[in-house]
Image (cartoon, rainbow, N blue to C red; front, side, top):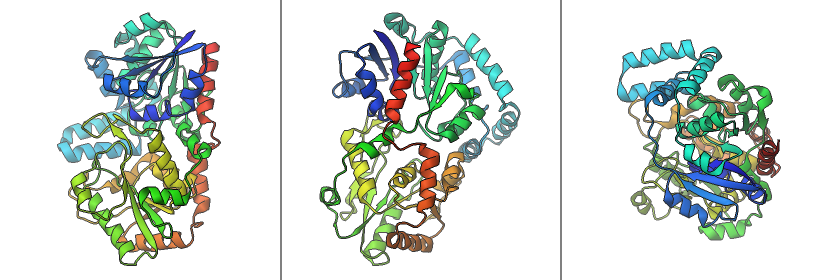
Amino acid sequence: MKTIFISIFQGVEAKNILRTDIYKELVSNKDVRLVFFLGSKEKAEYYKKEFSNFNVVYEVIKPYRLSGLNKFFSNLSFRFLNTDTVKLKRRMALDVDKKYISYCFDYILNKIIARPFFRRIARYLDYCFAKSYFFYEYFEKYKPSAVFLAHLFDDLEINFLKEARYRGVKSIGFINSWDKLTARNVIRILPDKLLVFNNIVKKEAIDYADMKEKDIEVVGIPQYDQYVKNNHTNREGFCLEFGLDINKRTIVYAPNGKYSSTSDGSMIDFLYSLVNNGAISNAQLLVRFQPNDFVDMEEIKKRPWLVYDVPGIRFSKERGVDWDMDGNDLRRLSDTLKNTDLFICYTSSLSIDAAVFNKPVINIDFDLEKQEGFLGSPRQYYRMTHYKNAINTGGVKVVKNKEGIIFWINSYLDNPELDSAGRKRLVEEQCWKIDGKSGKRIANYIINILNN
């Protein structure tokens, strides 16, 4: 029996791996043992209840502290990436700490070293001198044949990769989001093979991660398989579940969350007023919050008329990566996409989800309240590299004022086919294939690497 190490340190990793055909296909192979690594006993016990089998093992790792040369190369890795998103984040940091000298130093250093030549040198020195044996005991215990890592921008998973490299164990990376290669840091140590959603991310892996084209495989988006394979609840059942009127058109608003906006409540009130006072006729509002954010229930209580969905479970008391969407949450998301008429959000991957179902998408690019400083408004996020790609397809309508949002809500509700060509292009570019087989493709790729 061959052993595969798989990291599940983030909610998005569980969503992409455990809750897709990646897990189903791998666990059905009796010649393979899966060892999942998690950061807490609570999460391990939670997943064991649903994902258990004779060939599945859970390991809870001790807390990891970055130090020494590992800390140095980790900090340095943020200087090797030069994208519009990185420039935006640097400017946002300046707005908080007011460290103008550091800002100028980082700007100049980034201009000089954000090149393949310097990245290669850094990776070589990182591998040779920033030794890490954090996962030594687990490799000794299980003697794995491969590691599958879905968040190579995290230092903990880089330590995983280093141990695999030291031992000659095959490594497969997975870029499980459309923004990571342009929004975070460069990958400190490269895996043997890399799986990506689409050809855009493939090009970014070549340009920014310096991966060789022959070592990159485009596989699609595994969590989108459910959109093809699920038996969706019909509209009547969906409306009954949420207490919605089946005879009214449904507008979904997805708040950006506390990390980037202080005016979600105001936007909810504004959109509700539009459907309540007749500016938008024969319509109703459903608010779908983010699974990785915390909702202020006191604000909810102030709005007894609000129809809303709060998906997910949180393992932490703070917003972040420690969350999970179970099967029921994913079903409700899929049913919402199928049975509603229009989606309104800021810079969100929900824009792609909606486009998969050919549902019109409006992105908000105006503030209802005056925002203080550069960080006060989510509007600046439209400058991010990955999101520019989405907007350029013509599949997302970005509105600049109240009048614009009223106009486009009415236009899309009256003619849902408007901009459908742009949405088709958005899906083709970002999803590659929507055939329900992405999870199976990934699992088969891993098995082939294991056997060869």
